[in-house]
Image (tube, rainbow, N blue to C red):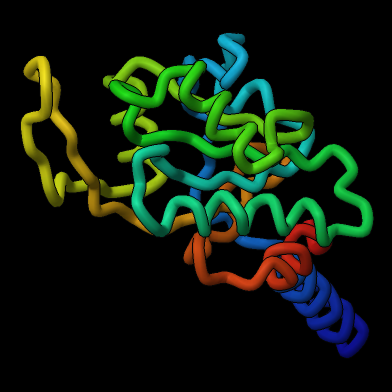
Length: 193
């Protein structure tokens, strides 16, 4: 009986230890497909095209007067400060697809010297982008707008400040403040995957 109880305690301890060492997922994106387009006009399916490698994903819009450039720079810093980025993908998705076409994103990526592997800048159909933003918890709200020449409208958006760390099985593992999280914290979390 003692041996049985000791073995039972050992099994319970081992299971508890294994559970505590694994990263609990905040969400699992393997049940969805978002058809998007990268800065080169190539079709991308998120998360399917990224399975098998971790993803550092930020959310931006190119007309942002402030915080989006910090999010973009932070994603770049994570890559540049990693000793071995391996297969890690670095993705920035716009939540302003009406203005952020592939061509606009390509110019934006060039401005940050990020128009190269392993960086991708994604846009898509506004309905698909809205669905993706809802799923990842990125909220936007128009903060200022005015009509400019030829009936066009200029506007700015208040928005979530977010970078996500997604594992190789399309599970959301960490959700960071995009512009303010030190790159070394994201790198340490990547190394745990």
